[in-house]
Image (cartoon, rainbow, N blue to C red; front, top):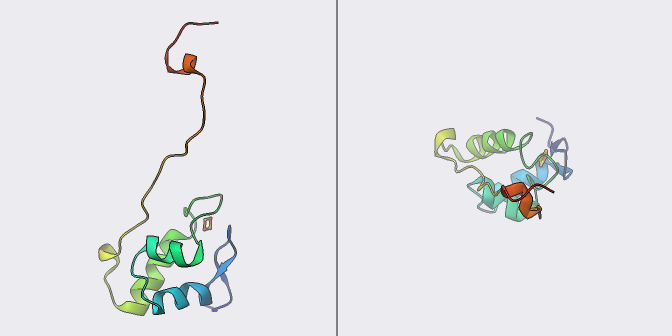
Length: 89
Ligand code: FES
């Protein structure tokens, strides 16, 4: 991997930035996310999460299944009450 390659393309976070976060103590996706904003882009980590897990594993020696993935939160959007089964208009 070239260190200046984008790992998170949505947020334009490079391998260097991810590795710096790991060297500062990040041992989970959420920890890397808080330090770099990786996984906060349009795809919400669908493209970069697995790459970051692999980097954490390579750098720390942790087995991949032991690395905590992201906490997922559903998007919150206002919807009309009729969408929940109210009267038809
Ligand atoms: S590539 Fe990281 S959030 Fe989309």
